[in-house]
Amino acid sequence: SYQDTFFILLDNGDLYGMGYNAHFELGLKNTDNVYTYQKIFSNVQDVVTYNYSVWVITKDGKIFGAGANEYSQLGKDYSTASYFTVYTESILPAKVVKVDMNYNQTFVLLENNELWYIGGETNAYIAPAKVAFTKLLTGVKDFSVGIRGLLCIMLDNTIKGSGENANGSLGFNTTTAVTTITNHPFSFPSPVKQIVMIARTTYFLLENGTVYGCGLNNCGELGLGHSNQINTPTIIPNATNIIKLYKFDNMDTASIKIYMKDSSGNILRCGRKSYRPDNVNDLTLVNLGTKYTEVFPNYVGDIFLGNDGYYYNWGNYRIEYSTGISNSTATQITLPQFITTSNKFKTTLTDYKQQIPFTYI
Image 1 (cartoon, rainbow, N blue to C red):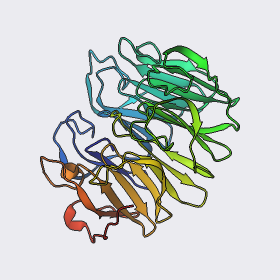
Image 2 (image 1 turned 135 degrees about the vertical axis):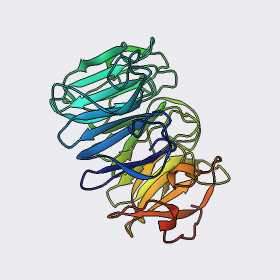
Image 3 (image 1 turned 180 degrees about the vertical axis):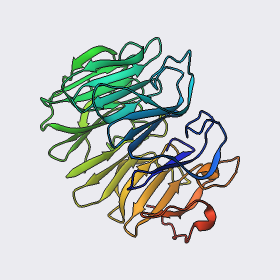
């Protein structure tokens, strides 16, 4: 989800959405906010959101975009379509395996390991603005995009990147912009398995299970015990045997956090602690244990899948749309609330079954 628009993807590929819809995010041909879940797509593999733009990836490798398109980031010249009112397909030369985007450009990894992109403002930082999908790189295994930066893991396990770098988020040991796709200068002790760029902060998960980070660190999101900016990849203490990093859509550099999961099933986090009323940040990694099997971070709150099969939400979460209640002000949630079950979905607050006593961690 992005702020107040919420999606649920079922195992059968059906995609449901509800909430804020001022930019046609739900692809329903209108901008009416939606207060109960509506089915909006079928045969879906994944859904990617950013800044009021949404991409749907189908199980057969096609992509469809809806929502804000002011920088042509959804696949068409914005002068003729500043919004996509329904989910509209973009044709690419091979099946799509991953989509990631920032506020003005979309990047797409194809099955043939080509990286394509579209969109951009006058100073697009990563690559020149385009109003049609354009091939950027070949030989790409994985990639991640920040607000104005791109980092790629190549098939030969080298790292390449480009973009605005004022906060050191590229990890090039400088704050100077990298204006062309360039080999990364840092020598990691193990091949990089996953890169996650969140706004202006970057995390590198290595094959040996350790995690390195760099970039903006205002909320202690690098887990180093302080809030100083870091310009070169630095190992995060106590991040061992990590198997997965969780990315979320965020343009607000004051709300950064990171979640990760280790091989024993523990969920760990550091950074902005939005679900605490005292706004105390976690400057080092906190282990939440194994009571949650997955986490879905959000710009203003977080949703957890518990071992009991129920979903719970924490945080300063804007519930006026996501729970089906019309309310003009954000409400601080002090108790995790039951949302749904893993094999059913509920439509309104009246379906919620229970509240679990909340303990600050």
